[in-house]
Length: 373
Ligand code: FES
Image (cartoon, rainbow, N blue to C red; front, side):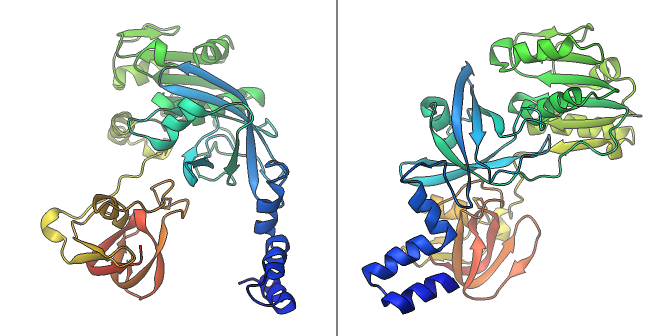
């Protein structure tokens, strides 16, 4: 309880109506809840963003232009923000990278690719409309352009991974970058490309070359004849023969990232490769290695530990704990571990202290564990 809340209780008596009103109006968080009744864009400390434009440019993506409140401090090209969207009364949080230039103030452009079964991506595709207001966290992430800028920059993207690298290209161009930029974009077909026009406009700039590779339609849109199909050495060598002297930034599906990484590793160029991964690969314990029982004591349920994250095991047991990013960033999934040992699957750290708040999405049980959900 904060000092202000304690003071409110002392003045008005715990639990009284007056105390509740004072508590509501005397903490910054509560003030935001109060102010949003007047206008959800007037907030004390929480950053929010209002939808100004909705474009369903492809059947698999929606592009939102959002105006941010003064609390949002901008972003660096390549970083991501966490967008909080209330769906059926529950705030869901997901990470998205802005696609616009980081010189834009007060505006972010998000292109959200629909994921099969994706709660938030499909909700936004189907329901986002002008005037909607979402919460926003400060931008974060180390996937950024270096200072000083490299002399040559290669950008590689696949699918919805276009957004951070497009932001990089737009930011470089907008800041008068004197070097050359090559952009390789892999997307199933032209109909799936949400940025056809913008990429064509970028390609008009003499120092920028853009190749859109459409494996599904076996075609390529770009100034140099490339083999249609997935990334391989010939694409790199044709589009960026200078890659060993420049810097490469990539974002996209795991198979694309794996191919690029393998080639750069083979050539001893990993220090020139930078990547953003939206999905963290969660190591899981092999079936035979997991043991013990996971007790969900708040729900009178339990399950044999199968080694997956507690969030996944809870969902398999029919529970619906709150979650957001599912990758250990947003803390939406935090719950109290009453007893037992858990392992953080990202760091490997063990936690065997009782009554600890843990993140369900990145914690796996090690033996018997009791979680208060
Ligand atoms: S869901 Fe975001 S930290 Fe677990």
